[in-house]
Length: 395
Image (cartoon, rainbow, N blue to C red; front, side, top):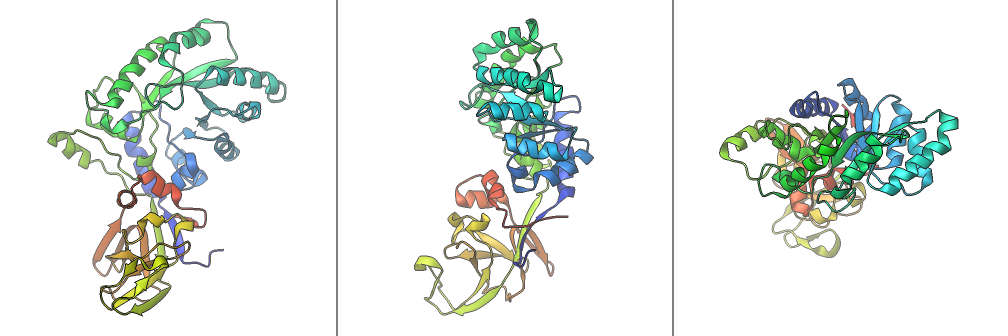
């Protein structure tokens, strides 16, 4: 039960729309894996997975084994890719027992899975298992080095090894937004990956590389030889944040603007207290904000314990009565103050913390990207920061 007037509305209709847009960009024949890690970027993994399955999705990506196990308990048939390396043999055994699909980044991972199959095959009846291989082409985080490609191909495709079957090969772009730039870092990674994949062609193995930015780049240049053969793993744009694509001509910029993605999360609260402050009085901890006139200050029950960052103190805006109103003073653990002097708001009026609001013919919005720019971070952190204290309401 929720007594506090604060909630995150998750618009599943918008999620479905975004899925269709991105799925069409990548193409029906290419591997496509919507990312549901981190509780679907804060949107609710079970609910989002169900909506996407109804749209035809049959594969999802998560970071943690625990995330994969949770999805498997609800969805028995979906393919669930797990990108985190295994910390111990129990992780590998859980992956095998729950029929998750591990994205393997090292020989240790290969051998852990082979041992796990031997450990659980009597109980589960599993004797062979599908995996994907990940290569490090520049991210410098996870993945086999490119010069291991031939050795891996020989091990899985030419040897008598029957325990593990490679179904996909991937890499992770460190700067997907420059995928269309000839001297961009993503382009260099794509060139390396194309050489790696030569060792795996012709065996019904799917290449997947495209993050949200690279998916949109593929839309802008559908015949780009480095992009058109790759599958996609969209994340942030699935949830309505249009990933950037750098170095666009005016023609491509116009096409980019026509890509229509809808925000999925909207965070809504209410004014719970209003007070008048005289010129010179201060607001919140440290007295860092001083009003310059007689002001009406509203209190909104959302704070950094809910994921509304302290770094937004006296920087960001919320929306009340269809108008942007400034956040004033230090964001507290449970409360944030807003200046209502110019909008005539009262206790009980709705406040939009994230998203858009219409009121009396006026409308305004505050986006995840705008909050990210103000906080000096990215939209991923803004969305995933909203904590479990905010009930998710699905509309």
